[in-house]
Length: 234
Image: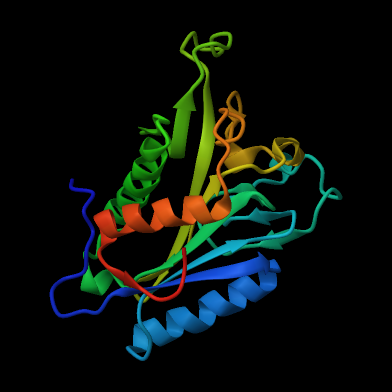
């Protein structure tokens, strides 16, 4: 399965939009809903929205009550995407990826693999080895300096999450990459329902970069996997 996921010839570039400030989650949902409908009807281009949110938890369609450890810590929103609980907040780059798979490949698994490749390419720019796991969605970083995991393997932390939804073959929701969030905020949930592993960030790994720097690399790596972009942004 190739990770290259560019649109077929004849389709325009993807609109790239960086939204300043902390975007309330309901506003993000409204923006995605509106643009997904427009993409599906052919009246708007495919779009990537890069945002930061105020501290909050979101629940995917597979979220279990037991995984919400502290229900009163931050607001909890029903996301409508796949997956379980996750945290969003300042210092985390969230990218909502609104693509028309009819222009590319009507293959959701291949789309998720392409998102993983995008994140892994971005991390590689900062000399961080991000890895896939067959039994765990997202991108992972090995932590050999830490004690072995319960199963005797090298400890691993999650650095990026993926959660998507598809309607009329148009994707929405997307990825979240931990740049420099407060990692303690993840303790109010069991992130993505996965126990026995930690959460990390670029800052936690000793890599201090600004959000504009991250956005620039994300854009370059996105174009490598998905094709050209257009619009204001980093």
